[in-house]
Each structure stands twice: as C-alpha cells, then as structure tokens.
Image (tube, rainbow, N blue to C red; front, side):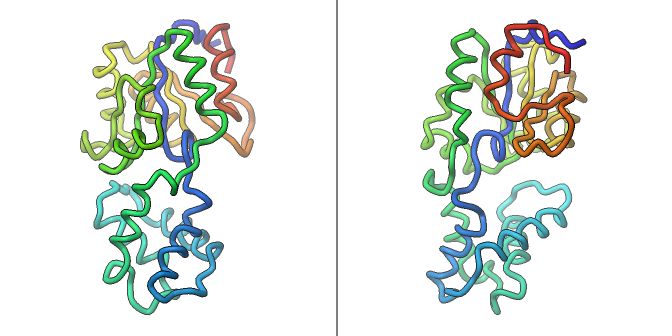
Length: 229
C-alpha cells in the first residue's frame, strides 16, 4: 500500500506529459523543409524516421549539436543535403514558438486543482535552454515553484541527481514529492532512485494499471485519499 496523502509536492515531466509538438514533429519538420524546396516530404514518413532516430540516440543530452545530428538522421534519404548545413537553425528556432506545441486538455484543470489543494508544483525535464521561455509563453511557468532542466544541472533523467536538485529547490524530503511522467525508465525509475514517489502517465493505456494513470485528472483524487498502486 502506498499512502499518497503525505505528498506535499508534485513534479512533472514536460514533453508527452504536459505538452506535445503540434500537429506533430513530422508536420513541423515538413513545414520548414517546404520553405527550403522540399515540398513533397511526408509528415508521416518524417514522424517514423524521427522515432527511429530518437531510439538510436542513447544518452541524449539535448545539446544543439545533438539535435542537429538527430534532425540529419530524420531526413536521411529525404534530403540530399543534411539539414545541419541548410535549414536546421530555422527548424530549431521553430520549436521555441508556442504555436509549435499543444497543451494536453487535462493539464490546466489539474494544475489548478492541485494548487488549490496547497500542493507545491515543479518541473523535472530533459530539455535545453528553450524550455524556460517556452513555458512562460505557454502560460505554464506561473504554476511552478521549481523548474529543473537537464541543461542547467548537467544531469538528465533517469539520473537521480536531477531529482535531487528538485527536492533541494523545493525544500522538501524526496519522499514527500511525487513525480509524474510518461517514461517508465526516465521518470519512474529515475524518480524512485532519488527517493521520490512516482507514477507513470500512460495516455494510451499500453500496460496494466499498476502504478500508472491514463490522465492527469486522476491525480487530485489520489492525493486526497489513500491509494494502492
């Protein structure tokens, strides 16, 4: 049995948990590529190749050079010249814009509800220096007492170090913090290694119900009543 009534703070992953690229990574890549003469590129193909490339890049640290290499791999066989030598900078900047992102429908109601309960909120995210300004542009940064980003602390999830930074910033013992994210390895295992409680956000219901939720809206009830998960 895991009693979540002791939880005083909740930290969230960002990508796939609070926001997602809109309409998709492939659509945005194709949009920028079209402005540089690649007008017949399929967003669906780019989505597939991006997913494959993402899996190939182990220990991704979200640096600009790593992003350039990932984009080049995504466009392999699609573009004669690698985007790193042509339109990568424009593409990189495109993801700074709030218009390139969609806030999941359950996010704002959940953040409002948790704040009303007096629960402190934070971010623990593997991202680069574009995230802070983006969260502000999206109107999300005002909700969070602490925003801990891998590029700032030089450690990425699942390293417990990034979670340690969050606990210290929030002034709480790790066992009083619940972390929520959409990656079992990076979010759940990483948080638990740091002493946090953790829940997997599984929007697609790809696994069983143990230790996971399908929507963020389930958090409010879990935090005001004892839960078994």
